[in-house]
Length: 423
Image: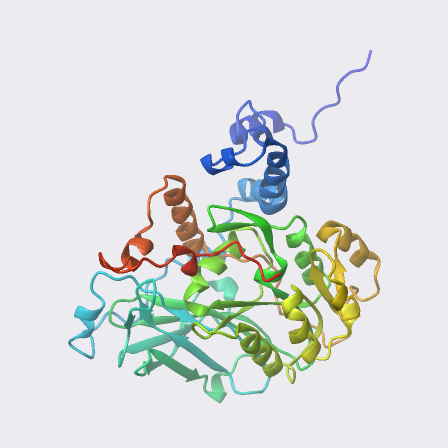
């Protein structure tokens, strides 16, 4: 008679029951009402991509076992060292009444030894209806991320367009690494967050176009696009191989909180994110300008996106063998890129055997930490938005953005994380 072997986890069974209960979680997936309109044959594929690919089960288990609160979570509940003060302009209090802050700061990539300039824009309302003008903003930087301590580096006053630029003094310049930055409005302690990445010249990087390479062809309710199966694993592979990750998107910077929350929700590896400066009719030009500005600092070895991104990557000098386009092949672009017609899963298998995806040949980056996107506040924001959408009620942002009676309503999809990819 075969005797069962003792479990290596000891009390593993009671632990599993405490996590999930007696039922298997993979058979009890959430099903929005909107899915009832889809053909039944498509549901298994949607569920598979939604749960097994987008939601990292291993990360969930480790969080349950470790009970470790990350430094990013700790940093989100800190109290600024400088207390609130009265607004510099009397009308500011009236202007920002009944509108929520939508501040954003730009992720910055700079070569070691070069001037380290931080920039941000401070607006209120879902469509930037109010500009914070002539007010003090304090700049804090976490110089030792694992410590959770923020250091005050200086104070700037916003311009007439709500913008500011702050240059870190040369005697306080930071070494190679990734540093969280927080810009706090003195008047109400609302803030914008970003990352300053200091790299060695020639650091090798891989660029991903968020809309062109990550979003799947089906999105529930138009606000939370599903991730293409295997997309997260491909990005992790490049990061684990030693390359810096850069995300670019043609979306306006007013959507930064929503987009970063989406990356965090789906456990994408951490990387610098570039947005367009406001609404623009030519987002590809701004993408190209941002990447061109980095050519003297980093070396871009591969790019992912849609067919619209081919010209952007080609202008950077990337060879067709290193331009990866997701989706079905288009004949006229056949000689300009590599089409991933079989998806990311097959592509990942090819990367694991290809010589290009081995350790980078550029300068080592021992202090550029690895990890997934972690931003607890935006994730909560996205979760609340999803709950409101499930109840089929308008969100607060949509109610604030609604025009007065008698005026034509604009489509709410214009400020949401839309399904439409750039294919």
